[in-house]
Length: 406
Image 1 (cartoon, rainbow, N blue to C red):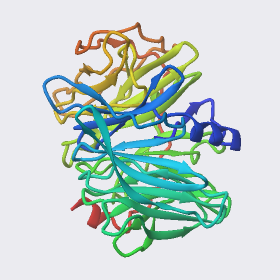
Image 2: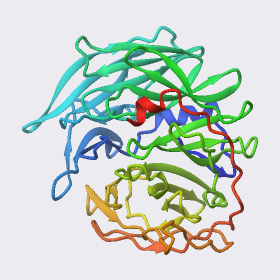
Image 3: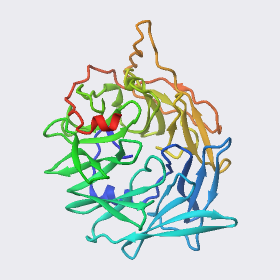
């Protein structure tokens, strides 16, 4: 998920982009959380590693090949336990599926993609629902292409081409048909929806004419959208929330502005059908003194600051429908672990409307270390600046909203 700095604002320049493309990602989970994959280190070298997370105890399986992988190599778990690997070889993007074969690692080549523009960059999109297919985004100076790179009948296949540079990538349905992308055109960024079945592109998020609007997360059950936009504060990106297909405005809660920290949403609690305000949203909070976990619900006016497990693969996690946050971590003592974090429940008064007390007007303190494999993480006092009334900004009703939410 794209890091969004809330206070102060973040710049996206070529140096930042080069760094993002060259460093290994922490960990990637399948949409159902059954498997994970990452590049693990062995001294100065890197090798793929698959995590199995749906059993009683998590465990990791190394998948090394004959030579170490480059740091920029991407890996992604598939629903059947195999791991998709994306390598760049002599300017060509090669894809293969890795799987354990007794003492070794098997590899099934899937073909490759040769971008027409040598300056184009290709990256894997987030794992698709179902886990049977995998997709990639090829971003050139003037156009962006969406590719099916695993699960097709005849190797990689280009599904759609959009004008301008696109980023992001959020799945809006359970069939991997509707993909939301942040499209840069005319000097502004707006979120559009690509129907991968027919190639149709439609606008989704256009808050204000002069704002940059990006979609960060979407929940299939409730329709909750987490966005980043500078509409309420021109030149300064802020987190907001809305509901897919709704005519109600996007809200930008003041409590999501954590002083001197960047805040990155990475998971939404599923299963809250028709109640988007009650969905818990997991946040990665990065500050001068470390990183920790924040939990926020749209119905509340505060962020709960929680301890992250030691060795947390930062920005990686998955909610259960019951409201338990599962955070993968790796330490020297526990090379493959999952911490279960139970945040405080939403306060429900007699009126039945969830609320929470106002936070104290102080900066948030970083949490203490936490190393137990399955221990419960306790809440720290939420201490961002005192909130003020959010400024409502119109949210365009999604043209494909009825199709997405049914």
